[in-house]
Image (cartoon, rainbow, N blue to C red; front, top):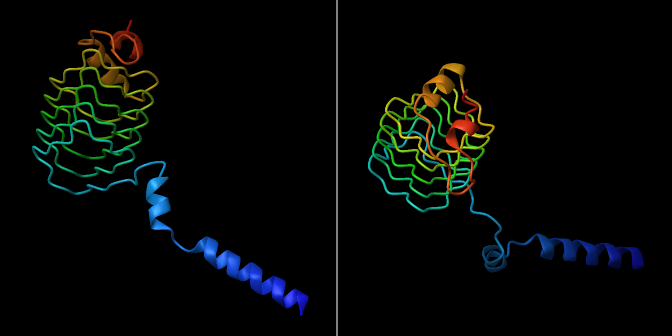
Amino acid sequence: MKYFIRLAASLIALIILCLPLPAYAQAYQLYDPPRSFSNAELTGRDFSGQKIQAGEFSNANMELTDFSNADLRGSIFSASVMTKANLHGADLRYAMVDQVNFTGADLSDAVLTEAILLRSVFDGTDISGADFTDAILDGAQVRELCAKATGVNPQTGVATRKSLRCH
């Protein structure tokens, strides 16, 4: 009988502990849940200053979109269009940015450390003060970016040319 009472009490305690507690969860949430904008039409949208960590922007059209000073750490921008987008001062650490068209975009003062930027297009892109430390880029991309690399990132203190390992 004692065994049965202990088992019942343990099961009740387990059930209570497993019940959702929305007020508690909201008050103590440590991070924002990822948001998905995959396959979205986001032309001209304003995401400036927003915290969108681990967001997903795959196959999205973000022409003229404003991401200035946004926290985009760990976000995925795969096979997307970001022509003339404003990413001034954006935090793109650890982001997956492959096959993205940045033609005419503003990446000045952006932090792209440890980001993956393979097969992306940077024609006419402003990268002054951008930090690419430990970012993964194609060799052709590095040569193209080194040709126009200037400035020092105000957040990290790293020169753009040094972060790209330009000669």
